[in-house]
Length: 107
Image (cartoon, rainbow, N blue to C red; front, side, top):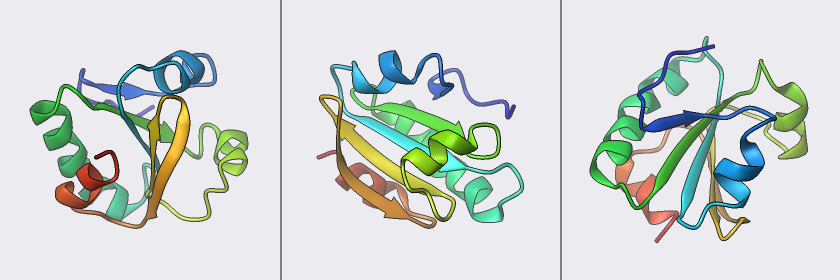
């Protein structure tokens, strides 16, 4: 499993419900793969959001570790980021996205 900053949650089958669907603040979930260069490039954008915006929960889910989860959400490419509010998907973006675009997904 990839090492992530302490303010970015690594999602698993066990914590997805509590961390995303039951969260009382907006959540950005990025589906990623360790080997993918755009995923690695997007990490700095996610780090910045997690550092500057405590009102937004930033999470990552490794599609190779949890392929069934990726399939459930229809993930066809990485990185794909899905924004959730009140447990509901509100926006989705595939491919490398800059910080301001990711932030606009939850505003």
